[in-house]
Length: 405
Image 1 (cartoon, rainbow, N blue to C red):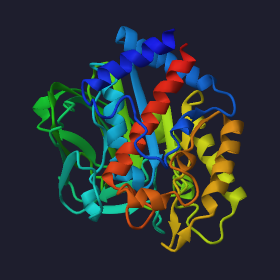
Image 2: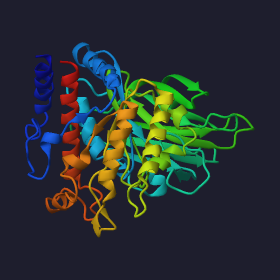
Image 3: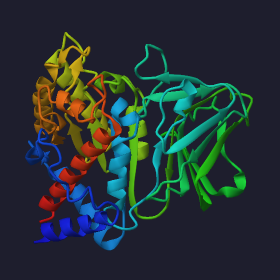
Image 4: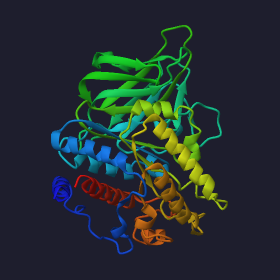
């Protein structure tokens, strides 16, 4: 009975925003809607904790739920994650706890999410986890470093037609060693309080009003200071709700994130309740795929996450059907799906099998024909990403209802 009440409550709220999308309809014959569910092949106790916290948030308006998605180009573009963030924050009134993670990707002239604009002053060098450079990386898979005092980064949030992403709390992941410049919010009249955690490498700012733009400047306060490294900016508000941090690097694989020496420390700094892993496409895009190596890398990544937050709920998204070099359907993806199910059973994770749900082997051809997939048969179009996010959210709501029944 409670499951039915929960689902009706959420979908009644969602219908205020989109009568067309929910309840989700069988719009495409090739999509396996009956398989659209979270799978729990092993211990599911971490999800009982997650959904209990969500329950408290929905029914009592207390708690903040922090979600992190780790991925590659599907995540960096923030179309799938942007749609999912919207559904999570509108499943009930008053659940938006901010825009979440942002980064000035324009520093390297790569694609940025549409929801914000980034500008900078000074010269910055950028290193990513997909490059063969020697640099100290963390959870976000990217770092921007400047050696110029008074260099700055500005973030401007675009107007959102549904949600107000004004924020009054900012967390900046950055270098905090003795040779690092300090980072300040400009204008400083906005700041109520500021605290730096030197051990985990971040500074927090509480603002005296909600704003939609922020400028961070680096300042030299000691002769030993000669650089500043930025790993990410997290924009939130201090209200109860859900905050979603989409962390993605184009071309990234499990190996890319596993080489990040600051990964665990920065995961502790973010302290998520739910981690979604959307990796594997780039691991499987090869003619010499090693399934055991792939499984081992996934387990290493999960162990890093659990080392930072032992009781965190983890969902693994199986990679989508794709084409290898635009010539033929990738035969590695169904093998990856089996390896991910094994990992989930051994590590107590849930699985959302996007590969099966979208139709399985060579289903990308049908997604392409319907305008849901790009011509490379790896990436999706905006409607394709949004439909996948609709599916994922529907599966999450159903799992939540099952656990709280």
